[in-house]
Structure formats: C-alpha cells, structure tokens
Image 1 (cartoon, helix red, strand yellow):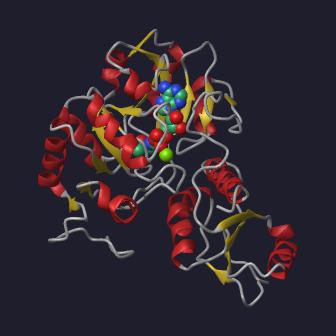
Image 2: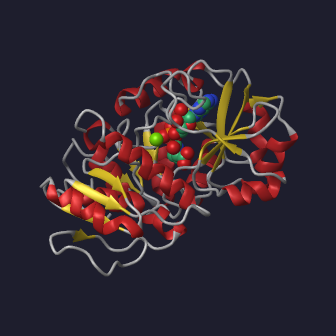
Length: 348
Ligand code: TXA
Ligand code: MG
C-alpha cells in the first residue's frame, strides 16, 4: 500500500475498504457469501472474485471489468481434491500436472461438470481450474469452502494489478472490498494448459515455465499462438492486444537499441523510457531509464509495476528489452508483445 495514492481506509465512500489479516479474510468470505465481488490476492496477480455458483455475482465481475461475457473465468479452488466436483473425464496428464503444480500458477482447462455454470465458462464445454499458491487466497478458499471465479482485477485489456494499491487505483469506485495480501511474488498470470483433449496445449504462457511442465509431461507441449480473434481462440481473453499500459510499448534487443532510440526520438513522440534486464551503457540523455528488471523471474515479478510506473511518469513510449525467453522469460515476452500490439492499434 505504499507505491501510490490509494489506501482506501476512511470515510470516502467512493474508495473500497482495504482489509487484511484473519479479520479481513472473514470479511471477504462474508462478502462472497452475500453475492458481492471482492478483490483478492494470489501469487500471480490480484483477482476480482465472486462465488462461482452465483450467476448474479458473476455478472458484477463482467460489468466492473467491462469484459465481454463470452470470455470465461477461472474457478479457484482450495485443493486439488475438488477437481472432480468441477470437471469430468480428467486425463492422466491433467492429474499429473495438478499433483505436481497445485497450489501454483497453473490453470487447467478441463471438460466441465454441471457445477460449472455457463456464466463462468462463457457457454464453453470446458472449465478453467486453479489452486492458487498464496496463503491468504488459500485461507479464503478454505473458509469459503467453494469455488471462487476470478479474472485479473483490472479493466478489460489493461495491465493486471500486482498490489492492493493497483486494484484501488484501477477499480476504486466500482468495488467495495479489497483483501490485501501484499505484493504478488510471481507477477504474471498463471500458465493456462488445455488438458481437455488428447494432447495438452499451452494457451497462455505464464507463471509456470514450459521447462517445468515438460519435465512432468515427458515432452514439450505445443504453445498456441495468441493472434486468433475473439470467439476463435481457444482462450478468448488471450487477444493479441492485451495487458497494455497507456505508453506505447516498443520491443527492442540490446543489439538494435541505439537504432531503435534514434528512430523513435527522431519522430519526437514525447518522453521516451527504457526498461531492460540489466543496466545499459549508452542511452541518449533524454531517455528516462527505469530501474533494470533483472533476469526472467525478477522481470516477471516487476513487469506490471514498471508498466504502471511508465504511465505515472507520463511516458509516450517505453522501449523494452525482454529477458531471455527461458523460464518465466517466455511469459514476459508474451505480455510485452501483446502490449506492443495494443499500442499499434487505433492510437491506444
Ligand atoms: O493468474 C491468473 O490466472 C489470474 C489469477 C487471478 O488467478 N487470473 C487471470 O484471469 O488471469 P483472466 O480472466 O484475467 O485470464 C484468464 C484467461 C482468459 O483469457 C480466459 O478467456 C481464459 O483464461 N479462460 C478461462 N477459462 C477458460 C475456458 N474454459 N476456455 C478457454 N479459455 C478460458
Ligand atoms: Mg486478465
């Protein structure tokens, strides 16, 4: 709660209450039971949560996010034991992945049971399930004793929140409760694996690396490219343009950095910034250099906070040098590519 303007305590009705600790968790559970929505921490990003069996509560999530209702939501459960309540026809691959990586930053798409309602699945025949590895989220799920549907707690298409303050800044006037579990340690969303068919397919690289998945499966899974339009993609929210700050994101490599700067600065776009894994020697004076993001895991952890910082600084362009595409580097590269794609469309 210390990196910008939002604390949420006090009399201002337009701001949500930010709560923490066991009493905060109890308030959040009570809100879920009452059919309200509440922002909750996970190890990946903050989620905007509702009782997964309550259609009216789910509708509030879509309204607040401004998200098309055919984009399904992930159902968060407290333990892998609950997988059979929500899904049917669970393959050996799915069981092996759940055993190995739950709780953790992995979402499995499985054939849904009757308990997974259309409001959650967007009418699809699969349901996304995840056991988050965050002590506060797990405590909440244990006390709630049911499934909690939650997308990332940002407006549709924007950068996901990794602190309670980010949630308040983004959704402040539209929600009434934020459960604060501290900054997210993974920093990018879960890896989504479709295990509803014969062969597992990764639909979104994320907080669980392909290397680790491959170790359990015994082969490297196919990664579906994210350019398909809504309705055609297997994960409808994974549009090519997504996760975008207001600043235009330009991806560069260390080798082409000076050319990139020369091209951008020559066009006089406003303030230009740089985000890179390590400090760079030769940067033009007028470029605002953000604190280096480090290697793949560290880069993932700070990525969204840095994109938000770029907006707070009023940068017109943020030049990003991605980390190497190993481990969580692949997810970082994926998010940067989507942010860059958003910047190229319709002046956004
Ligand atoms: O780390 C995460 O996954 C976070 C935290 C809060 O758990 N959640 C998150 O949710 O990123 P969301 O809704 O922002 O992104 C989930 C993506 C969406 O693109 C959605 O379309 C896709 O997963 N998805 C969920 N269930 C699906 C299903 N049954 N079939 C296809 N795509 C699905
Ligand atoms: Mg999201």
